[in-house]
Structure formats: structure tokens, C-alpha cells
Length: 198
Length: 198
DNA sequence: CAGGTTAGAATACGACTGTATCTCAAAGAG
DNA sequence: CTCTTTGAGATACAGTCGTATTCTAACCTG
Image (tube, each protein chain N blue to C red):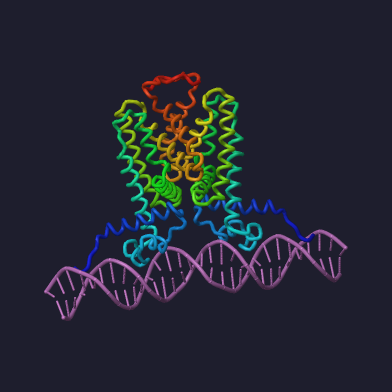
């Protein structure tokens, strides 16, 4: 056995470079050559680890999904539910450069998945994981009946907000207000006790 | 003045072909040549009406926006608000082939806009129009205080639901349940009178 | 009918695409 | 040290990209 290298780490290096490229220049700027350049190696090296571009994209999509899950796992779910839920959503919103990069990648892959079954399956699995975790947590807090629909609604809401923030950065404040309003209605804070709005 | 032709109609013909192509094969399959083929003409003809690909995409994005506005304008806002609002959202959701085509185009352009200022501006204008119309209507019904945040929330919610339906068609029923749950909370039906959930 | 203007097809161009193949340096096994 | 396997860069290939240019046929004006 001659010269060997940590294959998985190299794949992650390339995948990370790909995600950075997607965030900075968009998914259509992703090619084997541009990814190789971003990773600081030759396209031949990239081909060693991914036989095809589709395989590379699939790996990057998984990587992006893991990042989101890890980030969400990092929020303090011991906080009051309404506050914790807000924090959870905020980790997926492009409110700073790092989160923006991840949001761009997530949404780019999601739209791409509409015409690429492999990516669609990856996205569905990631969605399912997040939905289950969120629903289970909501049930444990007891603040929401019908946790699954609420989880779906919260996820859709944050995706939609993230999408608009991408090309309307100036409307961030207004969109965050919409988030708060929606969360107020979906997960009423015990203190407010559902003030009449109708 | 020799042989002349309805320029605007030809541009719309090409734009329509482009949208069809986006819906069926995705935005990355859009090239001057593929659009020309879809429109049943040569790429030279397409170049007559759009000097650059970006100009063609911008035109198609406008066209797509107009379609959504026209479709939304077609729903019966004289129905009970809760029901009318549900119908409004449904017109933007990919629940049948035609709506799916429009949703794919909307979302593809939206993600594309994250890195293309011209498209971003077009999207922002369309968003603003829809938001204003929706907020004004909500205020006129008296069912929502703070109509603007609610309008933003509803738009984000439907975008997020549409996005997931694109690659998770099998989850449509569950996502529609989430929509109903969210609308129940955002726009309480007068009959239900806000049942306690907390 | 002749003349000029336009629609639209055809073609040309250099750049870039994904993938396959080739070459060479490095490093562990004997 | 030598051999052999591997990582990785370089290059080749056929195809597509966006755009510019050229050409032909159709039409309206005079």
C-alpha cells in the first residue's frame, strides 16, 4: 500500500469549496473546473473523488443538509418554546454572511431538485429528518397541538422568508416582523394568552 | 416601411417558450438555441428580439410575474376571507400541471435573482405589487390587524410550500394540511372564534 | 414594377463544458 | 534500493455556450 490519503476529508474539502462557490456566484457557475480552482487543486484531482459532476453535486447537497441540521441542533431548546422556535428559524435565515451562504446553497439545491431525482431524494430525506425533530420537540413542549402541520408550516415559512431575503436584503426587517407575527399566531406565548385579533 | 411584424407579440412568443422550457427542464436547460427550438424558430430570430440572453431572461421573468398577478386577480375575493385567502394561495401552488409550471418558473427565477441584480429588481417589484394588493385586501376584510406582516407571512408560507411540493409531490396533502393550519391561526374564521390551543 | 428595409435562417467564432486518458512524482512494501 | 501502487496535475476530445456576422427571401413604399 503506497501513498494514501484521507478520502473522506478530501471529498469534504471539495464539497466545501463547491458550497462556497454556490453561495458566492450561484449554482450555474459551478463546473468541475471552477470547483477545482476554488478547492485549490486541479480538475483531475476533483475527478479522482467524484466520477461525475452529478455525484459531486449530490455529495455537496448532503453536506449542506448536515450543516443545517448541526446548526439547528446547536440552538438552546431549553428556552421558552416561542423564543427557541424563533432561534431555530433564525439559524436558517440569511441574516449574516455565513447564514446567507448556507441559505443560498439550500435554496439553489432545492430548486435544482425539481428536475433531478437524485437531488430530490436527498432533499426529501433531509426535510423528513428536520420535520420529525421539529415536530417531536413541539410535542414535548406541549405548546402546539397537531405538531406535524405546525412543523411543516414553520419550515415552509422560513424557506419562503429566506428565499425573499436572498434578493431583497433591504426588506429583512419587515420580513422578520412577518416571522414574529406568524410565530405569535402559530405558537402563542403563554403570557399573551391569544389576544383577540378578528 | 417594408415587411413588419408585431414585435411585442413575437417577444411574448419567445418568452412563453422560455417559460415552458424552464417548467419542463429547468433553468439550466435554457439557452438561446433551446429556447429558439421550443419557440419553433432559429436562434437568429430569437436574437432579433433579445440582444442578449440576460435581456431574454428578464423579459420572461416579467411575463411570469404578470401571469401570477393575473391569476391571483382572478380569484373571487367576495368569498369569506378565510376561503378567499386559501384560494389565493392555491393559485400559486403546484397542484396541477399548469400551476406547477408557473411555480417552477417563479422559484427558479427567484433563486437566480440572488446573483443577478436585474432579475432581483424585477422580482422585488412583483413582490411589492402582490404584497400591497394582498395587504389592502386583508385590511378591507377587517380580519387581520397588522395586514402587512400577515401578507408577508402568507406570501412566504406559500413560496415555501410551493418549493417543497416541487420535489416532494407525494407530500402535497400533508403540506396542504399545514397551509390550512397556518391560515387557521393567521386568519381566524369568525365561526371558530379562536379555539384555545395552548 | 423596382428598390430598399426588414424577418429570420445560417454560419462563424472563441470560450467553456463534462469526461477520458496520459504522465509523473511520491511513498510504503519487499 | 527497487518496485509498484496511488494522488494529482496536464492534456485531449467532442459538444454546447453566447454572440457577431452574413445571407436570402419577403414585403411596403415610391
